[in-house]
Length: 280
Picture 1 (tube, one colour):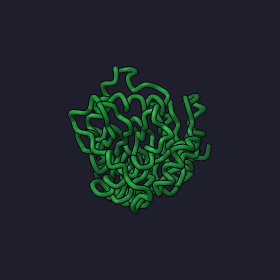
Picture 2 (cartoon, one colour):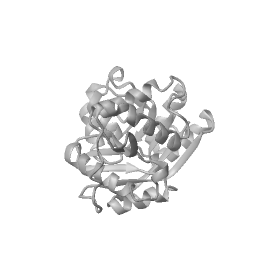
Picture 3 (cartoon, rainbow, N blue to C red):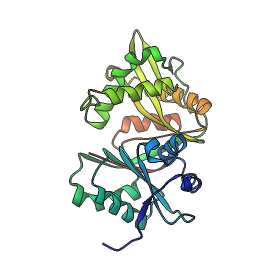
């Protein structure tokens, strides 16, 4: 391997530079920007480390290292430096996620020492919507109330299991996952169409920065798929999120999920890049 400059763990003294770097690509780096906005760069508050490539005053790239490994603004040499650090500490994350050009290289460097991944989802379209949706929002999609968490939770578990391929109940019985769902509901960032105590459609805003928010967990009840609920449901979430969270709404989707991609296109989302997700 070529020798490269090393990465370093960032701290509060780097905060202004980190924010400026994340502003370069606010859609792709929404997750990292949201974490930094909420908790700064102190690892004890963040529950993770943020690695930097470049000396203070000349910061070039970032990598979030927590439950996920998320490179940001990372060119070839920065990716090599992040791979070197990640290799030395061993795998601690459940996934690697980010722009394909960075994640694909990062995974190619880590795979020989980390072993096989459970799944690699390359070329996931990264989509964004900054204007009004092109379809009418579903008027029955509304914010989920805190007292409806137990109604929403089974739909969230079903979505996670279907999407990720493992149940969020594994390990701790779902305590952490339930806490996360409760947090999103309490923050007013969960929307659903609920009829007769059943969730027909749901989605959440999982991350938000000053200008961009990221929608996650889009789900339609299996018995109702193909009936046109997804497009108006996502449109309703987008309108609410643009009004109350951030003016640009983003999400990323598996390239093979043609039904979802068609629904998002009808709503008016446009592709602004590609993500790769490596799942362990």
